[in-house]
Amino acid sequence: MAEPRLQPEDPAVSWRYDVTDSRLLHTLTYALPGMLGGVVLLVALLAGRIALDAVRAGNVGRAVGVLGVAVLALLVRRYVPALLGATDAFDPSGRYSLRGLAASSVVGAAAVLWSLRVSPVAPFALFVASWLPTVLAAEFPTEGRATPETGTLVVDGESVPLDALSHHRTVSVGGVAVSWLSYARGVPRAPRTVVVPTNAFEAVRAVLEDAERRHDESDESRSSLGGAERAIVAAFGLGSLAVGPTLWMLLPPGRGRAVALYGGALFGVFGAVFLWYAATA
Image 1 (cartoon, rainbow, N blue to C red):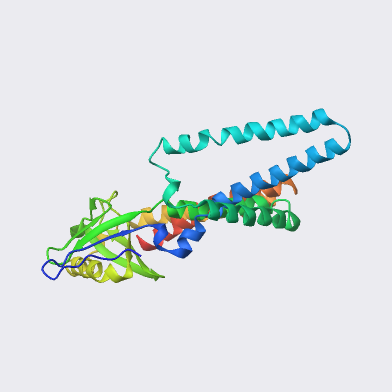
Image 2 (image 1 turned 90 degrees about the vertical axis):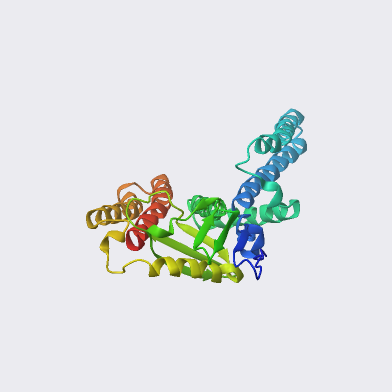
């Protein structure tokens, strides 16, 4: 767990938080690799079964062909880590262990088999759902520094414009506090979220509350959205949420329902984000 570094002579608090600091978040990050590994595991088992049946039937050439494809797939494994290591955008070495990947692949394979028994389109929904923890984990690691004495807050190397801060909302989840920051109009690229370990949040709270006290709560110009803009964002949100049900009614059963389920899940996420922004901005 990330620990704040608080010195008596310096009231500033620094923190760094990653998914590995939370057992729940760390477990959720295995969702997508587990799904992909589960599919690979099922394909490998299927290839082995086909090769074994071919040998029993005396068709050695077919068995060799299936095993040859499997060997080529294993050779690709040599280049995948190098490809991933060529970019700093994805560094799995500090988040995933071989034991965790193996266990999540087994769970993923079982989940795929179970979803196929529930509905032919259930694996698509399962795959889309497995992306959500990955998107969440993309926000980490996060770090920052709060100095109540000077009233400054820095998040991921970017200073929070406290003079434009209107209000904040905070939710505590496990050992972290997640704050959503709302600004006055004209501050579109300022940090919107601050993720802080709960044992370092008091300094952040002091800075945010002091910034709020410096603003007139009755000043409507502090809102980051005007009335018309808020209505447009809300309309986009409702429209995005309506994509799934609309496709479900218009498309034919079978593959059409799979498209409706996938499109509804994809647009539904964006619709929820739009509505949340319209309600909180």
